[in-house]
Length: 537
Image (cartoon, rainbow, N blue to C red; front, top):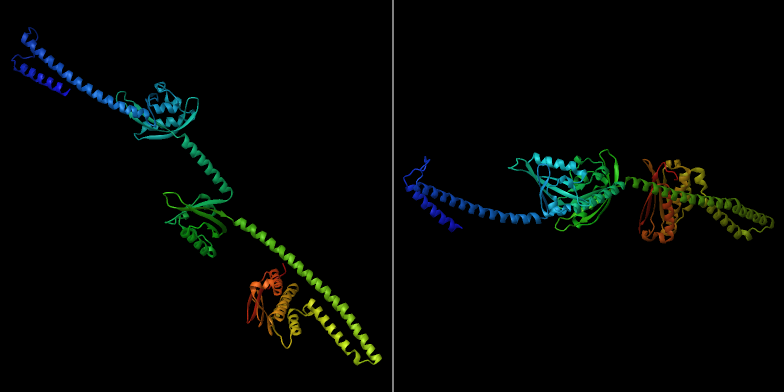
């Protein structure tokens, strides 16, 4: 084609030279055209014809090139995974690709000259008109999620994007619109939203908040319900672990810090209960649980929940208090029954057995006098005296009458005098205010001291015991110390000593007191402390 154009160009140049060499002017000729002039005109026509043929050849080549390029893009246009539509200024479809027609379940040729709005769900018409208006009023791309209607009335969730382009021939806008099928992602998104909503409802109903903690920067993220649990405003929390630690009750601060450090450094699961002090000064009990989450190609982080367990703790304390009270009632009833039984036995020994023994001794003395058998009944009298003495001792052990009649201080001193022997000495130091303790508590304390002294005599092999009862502030302190051999606390409950210690602890428990036991080969010291206004629960 280029060679042909060159030949034509050479001929045209030669013709132009021939015409220009003639002296006949071409302008102003009206009639009487000579052959020479006609030849010139014919030459010019030949030149124009050749120029037109050249221009036609160039246009044909350009058209073919454009046709080839159009064919390429037409293939891309039709086979693109996105639906394409060209709409005129009132929304009539001028062109659509195959993907677009397939999305709507229509034949491509049937879509032309159809109103695009007729394929949109009536519920989304207003949204579509707004979409068109935005495209007309701006040169930037617009997008919207619109439900389309397929053949058969099936709905298709799509993401629609478009831009308005001015048509230079009509002077009106055309709309270039793409459609992307997002039905599956929308369904998955809806399921995720439903699941998230159910989870949030479940967590909210259970009073549970969620948290996440990034490793490396130690950032802590709380959900909205966690803020309400901790009574925090979002602007008061800077998202750091230290900000959370500032809320922790001072007594729990060290435990929480240590647990968080172990969780971060050792990747341990977090299971922690602690108290927080809210902005209003309220103390709340919080339970926090969490574990490490590893996501491929991402940094690991910790996620978990926090729960306000204040009410649960309160109810648990009430339950524990009720159990404690029930135990105290049972133990108190048991000890009361023991004391009543002891009192009855003591009365029987004192009022019956002792009186009988006294009667026997009087009768024997009468026989001795009347029969003059003085020396013969001496062994019998000695046995009777021993029986009377031991019966009286046993009666006193069962019911300390001095304690009842003369008070706590006199009762303890009288007990110490009776148990003093050449091989075992008891020293007492009793504060006078001890007599102000209510009688029921006096009896409990007396039994405790009695048991401790008995242990020193029977099990410790002690030669000295010291009893101290003092008052300081609102507390009584009882200390019983001996110089015996001590005992092994690890096996105390398996020995006969163990039951005595258990009985002492039970009595201290009923007094809401506390007991400290220190023992070694050099002796044993037991300290008991209870309030001055103690009463039997």
